[in-house]
Amino acid sequence: MGSLLVDDIGELVTNVAGTGDGGPLGLRRDAAVLIEDGRVAWVGPARYAPAADRRIDAQGGAVLPGFVDSHAHLVFAGDRAAEFAARMAGEPYTGGGIRTTVGATRAASDGQLRATVRRLVGEAMRQGTTTIETKSGYGLTVADEARSLRIAAEVTGETTFLGAHVVPAEYAGRPDDYVGLVCGPMLAAAAPYARWVDVFCERGAFDADHARAILTVGQAAGLGVRLHANQLGPGPGVQLGVELGAASVDHCTHLSDADVDALAGSTTVATLLPGAEFSTRSPYPDARRLLDAGVTVALATDCNPGSSYTSSMPFCVALAVREMRMTPAEAVWAATAGGARALRRDDVGVLRPGARADLIVLDAPSHLHLAYRPGVPLISQVLHNGVPQCRS
Image (cartoon, rainbow, N blue to C red; front, side, top):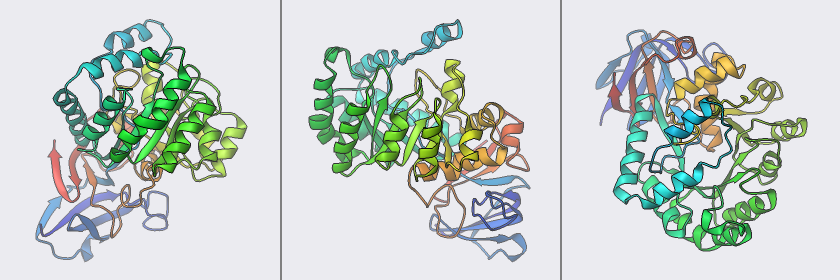
């Protein structure tokens, strides 16, 4: 593959604290990055850059680590545009539309599901996402959950078993029986294709006892813990996630002071999903409250066909700044290094020697433009494992 030098960088976001300007983004000016064998080999002032076999000219643009989208639901079939239109006309979001997607997903072929996953991963890559997590949860049978994760594992190592998304129609009124299925045959079939286990712990989905049972069994099977928590209202999810040592609790829209304190005293990341609030006309999480308390915050898209059908991390960065009281620097960190923390990764979301050479070049001089120019396609180049993926 040889060596590759990225230079003529106007602003380099390294996410290495204590370097560059000393801020959390570790900003460097007039910098260069050397890549060898898919890894960052050197970072420093352009005038001291080593020789390389090839060169990419950033043309004075900003260079950032690739976005790390730590929460998405990409394995599905069908369309819920009519549900979105109804919400925009005033109907509240309850999560009930998940069952519509379950029916379509069960009826789809492997080829149809694979095509959707690859389309969305490519769409996300063009917008700067170089690491993406995706969940099952639209099959809700042993066979359909296993095949969803098998297909997801073809495109990412960050796969999450979400058999506990909702109780499917055939188990209506029998949630204990369905939880038994999830904890037994479904987990056994899904675990070989999954890194994580997740539960939608909300009123109308799974309560704390059911969530604890599923997550504990998943942990025993070697899966890391993630949790959908406190999206639709106050609940036990955040504190349960902290108790179980979850890598991330996601949504975090309705938090008590005790929830914030629990997160602040833990290593659990609060992953915020502003695309969901945008698409459901729900209150946005108060990121400022979490950050001021010392909680580690990540941003992710929640890409799914019902409540957040966006694959754009730049859009989520802009929403976080405008609606959740994050500074542009905080939002960019949350969308890169924060997402890596939510996945317990230290090789992505950062540009330092040894890290995976995932980076994006902006057609703009600074990371500020991601929020300053919302909706504008600013990603001019994407490198994944040091290999150019797409160019505008």
